[in-house]
Image (cartoon, rainbow, N blue to C red):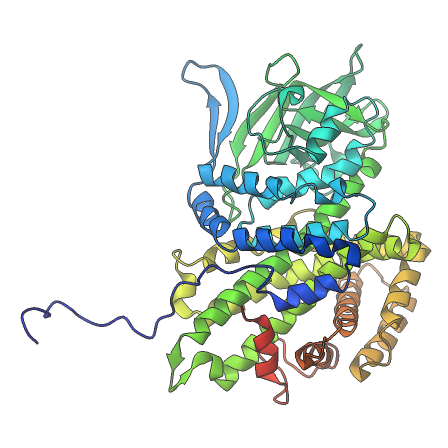
Length: 555
């Protein structure tokens, strides 16, 4: 070794390059097929919107997402002179993410194009891509989108509220709603003593002479406290009711919503989640007194769909990073992606991601058609709870398996995988944990006969295409006919329905002369329904066409 290079200890080789910017729409063959099968020709002109946002989300927004999570929100309860501000300060990248999303209609596409078949599906794709870039900002975007059906019950609300949600742009200024260019809406239901059991809420609402209500109480989880208004539940004289609670009153004063602290969360770091107290806060009744849960349930249904979208997106992004890494890393004489055991893992990950995305887009299609089709409405009612339970439940395991493909690098914070891993459990908890979803499934099956009929009709459309699928349907129909101990069995039943719906969605996918789509559908049926694989990912039968399946997942 010469003196000129004696301090060069080694060459950096056999390490992947950083994943280059790519288009989250154009470079995702699985997504495009699952979406296009549900879109009418009239929506083909939106290819440009999806392509543009796919490019933005795959580059600039990815960078902003990293910065927004490294620089967490900061609570500023008072200003330097002791005046109450209840302000949350966000990093500029958070605002850049929100502005880009709202410019591209992530929060309002469904409502700007309401009544047009495919609007919810297009919006689902926009959210799917945004969530891959950054998940925390998806919370206020989700709530703003989902608030519209509930807000329409507010007959005495000034019209600018709806207009500035549906047509507005991002405007983070703390001003009265009437003075803003656009509004964001949050939701607050959970209290310390009740959790998911909102009937135990103690927050009280007292009607005033001007028709408004004074709110006294608290919320233990109050997401995105800087939203311009929140939909909350409180006990009025007529029972549990829904109210719109502005952040800033029309006279310019802050409403009496006191932020007690921000939650120190496992993940979701860019998004502020808070505990608040209402000290005679002003709010406006949405709907009728005593009808709070029926009013807000439409909002919950849409946020649950977004949980499916978010978890599917997290699977997709984790898969992309795993595939990129193993394509540029050698071990034991072969590139990792060419190692037989690694191929089994990667193919299984691709199949799981495909099944999650296919079902998610099928449910978005059902939401699209619900107003004009009773079958689709009933299917959306049931499949949202089923999909929310199963897809969100599968995501932490999925992300961990993808993380393993990267080895130790996947556990280091310079890599995005730890952020995905921390984010992965959230959607299984948010908007009702697993047991809540399963009980909701039972409630729908018991009280709404058309829901079960819609499920059976949907599943029968693909009968005869795969023997494992047909056997699974026969067993499932028998299980659903057995009404003994339904609550105890509800997780198992929900899982079996979810697997059937995923298989149905995959079997119905047009293969466009690409045998890999057929491979995915039939391998899913064989491995998940036919018990041809083990409990862990990467245990597919050795007859699986691994390379063809993996190729569909690559960018």
